[in-house]
Length: 449
Ligand code: GLU
Image (cartoon, rainbow, N blue to C red; front, side):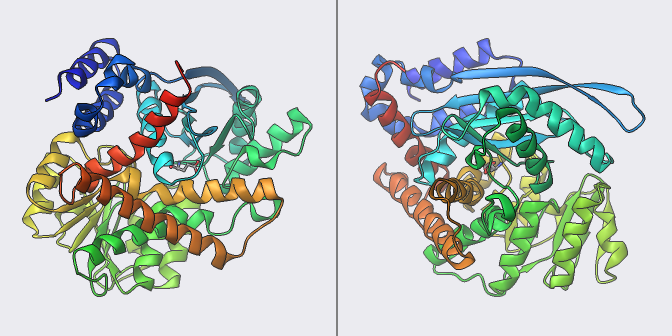
């Protein structure tokens, strides 16, 4: 192992010992950069890795709001502005009880490399709150979003930092945040947020982009392996926006998604989540705020519900975790490997523990890493920024074609980067190396930033 990399990892472990998710991503990314760091001793001289693991700025703030009964609540808000070497900070906002500084920093760090991979000029950032939107009324959501933006507005802008959605934040929440931003600023700057409604600058395909992009990427992997998506069975987790996009595009291309999952367990549907009615129902499940996978099996008799279980115990050709970080641990990885599947395609951000990830890779499955696979979401956000700057809106065909081109390119560049470093078809290392190089070169060129 490269001594410089190990030294930096050791520093993070000591300094940020209370941030397990952040340490996890730093270890995974930095270790895979070994061939590049070996080749470029100047990076060590210029403390490049130490600079990259330090966010440019961390903002933490109080969010005070009142529920429908007039009771006051206080939540913690965050924005981590991680790296602006190649563009304004860009990344989503997550509302979930598991949000803390470690989660925000891991997501901001990953976002920096992901955004670089898209080839669009976007730096990396992430924000959110430990607010739990489940079971909250529309009025409560609006008041929370307004309170959140009342602090955040001073730190963001179309050329500074451009937030978007993530878990718990969709078009509705982005709309409320945009309304509040506009009210405070007194300017119509619609490029300040992406994932907006269509009538005020939102891009077509943005809601579908993460899931569609993931399936486009999967398709490239299959083509590379001289295989086809037609007839494949896919096990996924989650039933939110990302899972919904995956289910739609996979069915369109002839594959069958046979599961969905939530905090209460998972549903197995041998007929496939393949019809428009089923896809529409996933949207209903999400907006109901009930957060229950079981609702799907109650609605569709072809499905069976497994309470308290994870979907990885089901056999499939392809596994695609679509929910959240570390949802696949060692025991799950063992079931996945035992199933004989050849492909493990991460869609949620860092859904696999490092131990499980290395196990799956060592057993010979082709692994698609989340920062490449799910980059379609932020890529279409980048296209939304372009459209807002142009004061134009592109057609569905135009955006979809650009998304496809970007995903094909991410796969190609990652495969090439790994190949050039003598690592074979290692898409995990390839994505890290390709994403890193562009940011590293920009930081060196800009002096001591
Ligand atoms: N939250 C998404 C992600 O993890 C999208 C971010 C964006 O569109 O800015 O990449």
